[in-house]
Length: 241
Length: 241
DNA sequence: TCTTGAACCTGACGCAACGTTAGGTTCTAT
DNA sequence: ATAGAACCTAACGTTGCGTCAGGTTCAAGA
Image (cartoon, each protein chain N blue to C red):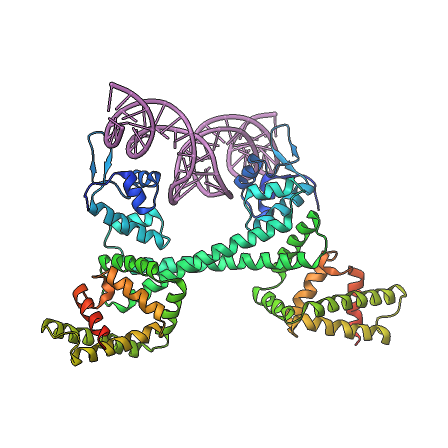
């Protein structure tokens, strides 16, 4: 049953590779037939097949053809080291992809909260997310995410309406020129601080970063109708609490 | 401070891209300067820069330049859908990479247990791992791994020496032609079964798969000096317990 | 033995997203 | 005016093959 001379098509079927792939391996000097017929057809022996199996084993580890070639040629190479390096590479790649996934998730939840998403809004959201990532560390973002996930959808809705009510109230005072140290205003400022604590989990660093973000980037879609003047006004009121 | 005419080098510095990259985006029709000077130099306006920012935002989500181009051109596209699809792609990629990492880890622990690894041994190990993956499902492998991780390095060593002692003892009986149903041998067979249970976590499916693996692949490096005859002998003894 | 379709051969281009020369023109500052 | 920096286009290189294109050889039936 076992013959010792295989044609390229047979070898292809045997291994699941394509003929073109075997041609390619030949071209780059990774794997060639040990014999060639007079007419130029490649003829593979059983030991050729074993070599190919080894190559495929290395490929399963995600090594490049170039690396595999080196592995097969130089036996002076420290293969354990190669495996280690490959593990590191893969680990790094996984990390990157996971970060990417988190980004996508964040955008997606933001999208979900908006009823109707125009294309411009999407672009804005993405841009804001990029800004946000710039102002907060990964750890901070994870903490905040964790924090907000503690709330039910119902509670989230409630908080959002609290925010807009509060901001509207503060704006009203500002437009009436109420001084920031007036009790009415400092009362609102206290509410403001407690609301902020709800998503910052009491982390002062997060609060600071958020302040920097908001004051550097007024007029972003995450601001629930804030602007710089209002922001200033609130800060003054907070100072007077 | 704000000018409305930027040269390509300035834009490159501003965005962290290279000039070549901007040239490339121009070539593929993704992003071009709104103006070109008489001498052929590209001149970018502020609104060009905004457009570029949007492009970079999309790039951060891992979309291809082609996809980004479509996003910018057709606003009929369902961008939420695009985000969803991208999430799926990334998830899949993460899964693949994690499987790869598991493979590498398995090889690495096998490497670690052997003192001295010749290149041929490494290749054999990899081939065996590929076989092993063929015989056991991912879930089964995870279970086994979990099981072995319960043991300390000390215990593992002990188990390994138990295996070789046991196998040596059984082989001795076999070579003395002791019948498989002799009490001495069935006693050894009991020990054998209990040892197997220690790594299979009592999962009969795993044991069955292992049996299939060992009987299909005698003479593999994981066999601690087993061969087919010995395997046969043990099976007969187990049947007589 | 002739014929024909399957299998084989060697190029050579294509893809994705640029990096990297190469060779030449234009800006800009002295 | 001149030199060096910055700009331009063109074109090849990278990775691992897929996919023609155009031609030769093999193998089986008439």
